[in-house]
Amino acid sequence: MPMLIKRNPGWRLPESQTTPEAVYLDRRRLLQAMGFGAGLLATTGLATTAVMRPHPALAADAPDPTADLYPAKQNPRYTLDRALTPEKDVTTYNNFYEFGSDKDIWEAAQALQIRPWTVKFEGMVEQEREVDIDTLIRAMPLEERLYRHRCVEAWSMAVPWTGFPLKALIDYAKPTGSAKYVRMETFQNDTAPGFAQTFYPWPYVEGLTMAEATNELAFMVTGLYGKPVAKQDGAPLRLVTPWKYGFKSIKSIIRISFTDERPVSFWEQLQSSEYGFWANVNPQVPHPRWSQAMERVLGTGDRVPTLLYNGYGEYVADLYKGLESERLYT
Image 1: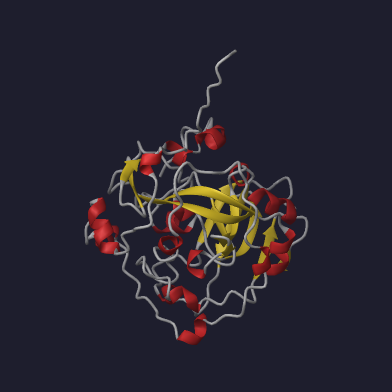
Image 2 (image 1 turned 135 degrees about the vertical axis):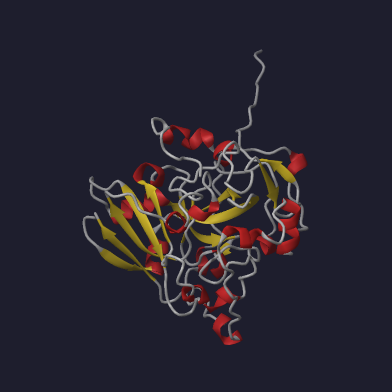
């Protein structure tokens, strides 16, 4: 009888690197452990935005109209051989520059009003339209996927996202054959203090090629940990591209445009020498101010090797053949 050999996908981690319940919630201590120290933000050339503490009434939203859709069935194709990062850590250690450049913005983000909310489909589409978020969510095939998340700042986590393939949204939008890119834009209003920082190129914009956007991994998120996604994590609609650095995962999307011109993203506008359009994870290509060879896992503080394409090369490597002249990894 032939021997059955089981090969684990490249993105699986051994059990020794699983994430326990404890986490370092103190941001400064974590950064120091990563080797960045207290001067990290100063060296970026980016000023720290003050954190707005909302009035308690602002956080008392009505029940989410789509709450009955959660938890969604988990898609077994997208699983991890590691423990998920505890929910408290994922929802209290966040980047959301509209509400501040520190990680401790989850309270400030409660000021964001996510109903009513609409998403506009514009540009090279058969018909431009604006759709209510609840109508959109109920029209999509919701599922749960377990994905790695890798930040350009060299920390990582494992997250149970709920949402639907970006390809399903593209089919819904009906772009024309001339469209080469998807451009996404987030909200901009007076509920968020970050917009007062005029040196940022607001609103937050991100983009993907149509090939990237229709890849099976590209995912539109509406939920997290079996319920609607929290405001600080990008409610009511965000992008997740797990083979790229996290800054590509635009939050709180209000506009999706299809175009034949490559979008210039938020961070590319701000500092193109450090943050490019492609932003694919590569441990061999350092950030100009720190190495990307290792990453610190939230929940353990362990330093583990970073994987090419964050471990998802088998799904996405073919997207970049013939593009060797591009800055694919920064």
